[in-house]
Length: 405
Ligand code: AMP
Image (cartoon, rainbow, N blue to C red; front, side, top):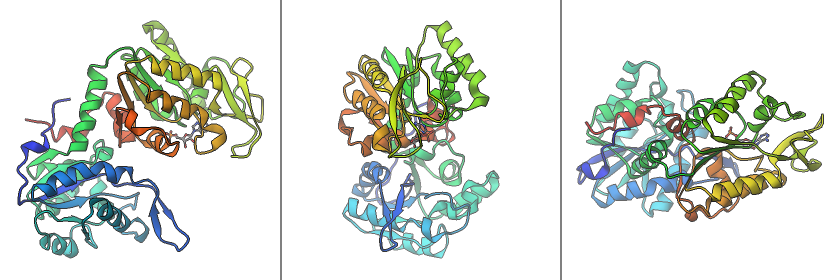
């Protein structure tokens, strides 16, 4: 990927900067019916860029989305709780507009002094944000462009999307990548072009079909590919093992068999679990036991985590690597009975003597939920989908528009 325009190349002092951030945080409802943010990692990740801009005397106007409101305003997907949390973290007020680009947005932006911060309402309240029609997206972006002097892209979680605030707005204003997007792009560019070896990728999560592209591309680049989580059962079926009622994508068995053959031909170590934690129900209090993959999963039982022997083996292979990327939990880590495999891999990442990267989404949530030492991991990505597309070798449209010409 060509280098992106960096924040230091953009004159922001005294100017109004439109900042696209990824504030798509998980929310829960508290006892009084209020909405609470359960993981503010993405808000914290944007602070360095916001503070860099405000300290230079810029007026900062944040554009972000929350959930999938499908182009219509929805009270439960308002960004107000996010603005409140951001204000707490910044230690300064964040003025909240009541709309995306209309009267309230204009008034809030007009009221900003240098160093102050505002947030517009959920950009996906306007159907043009995610429209397939580039003309519609450009029309929305033009409304925003009229509000500011320049644009900073700092929402790594959305750079793989063609959306008005991601791909059209930077074409209308002087622009740069924010500190977060620049760091993410640098890390993933290193991973796909120049990883130190041995290079190990650990994949998990529920669906193998989400990761076909990434497996196909990584097989040509890595030394070892470790596969756990729900997706390992499609591989185990391809090898002829009994998997009971574990998660299997029957229509992917042939594809997966092709990956096994390709890995063998290339000398890539494709490592699957040798034992499993199985349960008689998908429940925190199910009966559980450990079986070897050779024994197989009996009918009526399902694999919900990799077993202790596999967890130790995966951890050892991770620790012996110079570069490790991990995307997707090894089991149903949300339930204590099935978290050990995910914990073992996460903790092994903290002991890597080299570059260790967590690829966003559920694995980043697992790192935080399990209390794994985040500071001992080189990089925890904020973009699950974007990081997978990067590893697939695809061009991310939101980064392509930021490339230095
Ligand atoms: P994904 O959304 O594809 O990244 O998958 C993440 C989800 O996969 C997590 O919520 C895990 O609980 C779930 N998961 C991991 N391992 C298994 C498994 N063996 N069976 C069912 N679900 C799993």
